[in-house]
Image (cartoon, rainbow, N blue to C red; front, top):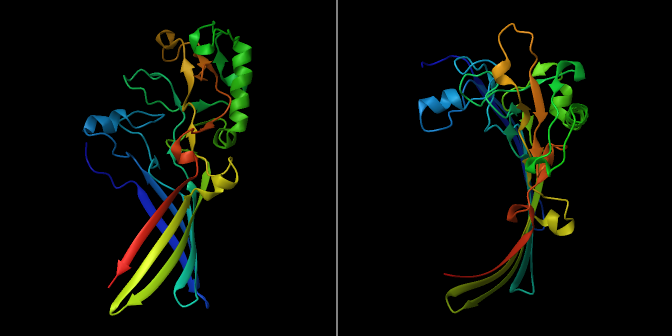
Length: 289
């Protein structure tokens, strides 16, 4: 292993800040970035670099592709308003907004398709049904004891391709490493602050009562602010790999992979976790000097 002059990265950020009259201020930032490299550098050994890098070539020459850590677009905005009244009271309302892709991922085969000993092979995205052959899948626990014919799996696969923006646009090509992007996620957080301040002698006292509503959009609508995940990145399950030979006439056959014991029909699911919900916290602070 040695160094390479391949790879590049660039980042561009534009920011606007403005303080207005009467206690109102706002900020808005947008970041556009891209990183392409040979290896992401995951794992704690050099072997992990070779074995864990998804490729349609070989681990010795994976080719440039997107970094798995790249966030191509990100928008951040903040708004704040503070009003003092009755000499000893002040109320503040603050809002923080963040929007970005939730990550990148690769479309792969579920097993070692090219027989190099590693399960890191990117899929070929067929143009149409003539470029891929499915095998009948018998009933099993993995399919809720339902059998699927080769034609049924072919129909389901191309339905899956059409609902996926990346696969639909790249038919007839090998998938790129980290070519898939998870959906945009928008999160709004709000803080309400009530202040009471009073001087006692030479001591300045400030009491703050706060309410934070995290993921406020989800508070308004249960469909907003959800965290998405990739249901099954390993889309295709090769079936007859041992029978394949270079230049041979035997065609590879596949099963369509499953999620929740059914053939996959959607790229993304919604995480049923704390991160997909709104939550609140209440605070009290006493400042003095």
